[in-house]
Length: 442
Ligand code: GUN
Ligand code: FE
Image (cartoon, rainbow, N blue to C red):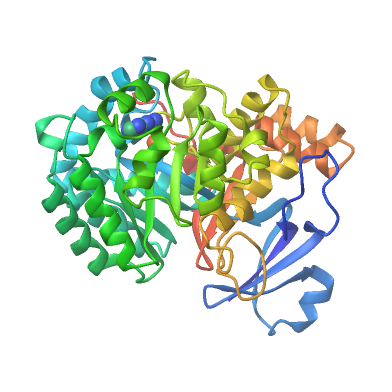
């Protein structure tokens, strides 16, 4: 049990797109405090209001001068691609063949999967992210590795085994029957236990047979608590390939619809080149599109029209999509989202950005009852941000006149140097200190 003292910001609702946040959409305490007890939040308030109510001798962690927010959430990321992040620019399908598939082959070895899983969680927490929905590889052991690493750190995490039974290297391919059998074993072992949830993971339409997609739909129909993650309409070459492979479907989304794969717990990464009709159909299901800006910019996939998607009533989430994304830190993702928006005449405000990283993503993943807000009874996952992490940021923060300006500068200039500390389940899981600066090898 501890009391964290610092500035505190948490959202209660979507602040809207205007530079002035919608009233009642957020709460901010300049000298606030968050009381953590048994892995949960006991209370949030002004420090002077809360302090008299805590037991004598309670440890107080002094984060004055820093900003406490709910831990960031990443709705779509590939942990198996950590080591190929920033592999020189080819478009999607070449990038998959040249870098991604070879990297994923190495996860056949359990020791490799375990080592990368630990390093991935280190990096995630270093960037302030406490929950992610994670693509593993087609090897079941890759899922055991990330779930057991997340359990040891008491993280809330979603993950799943990649299902792909065609159009990939032999070493990565499963079968319609075998892939489902492995997924069912993983669901039995991990889903709904500790803070873990299983997400069925057909990679994308081109790498699954109709039989495999059908079988995934069957598993999903039997358990409404399962998640599903895949890719949709990311790149023009991909769209043409899907049309060729599934001539019976009128568009890309129809492939997933036909097999029963589109529901409220589905996350589809990208959704850049969707028709109005596809958007309207997505809106009816409650499925969310994971906007992955740094990935879309890196692979040149296209500019995601956030506003059109939103106005069509489609739920959107925000994601790093590492290894095509260029950073795991939520702040890096926000920079990309701002830039994509700016190019479309829809610049992202800091209010909207930080809402998306926290409560917005929690809602998209149906986790708003337990994470995404600093609220009594919620799980104690939080990030402590340093708005003066570099000399330039310190000066910028000093001259900024409003909280909105300071948050915007943090969003545009910040990275993992701005993440002073990260807490999960009420315990410190990352602390930026001298050990963050590594000496050059001699
Ligand atoms: N589409 C299918 N697989 C992938 C992947 O690993 N990364 C991205 N960005 N798109 C995909
Ligand atoms: Fe992806």
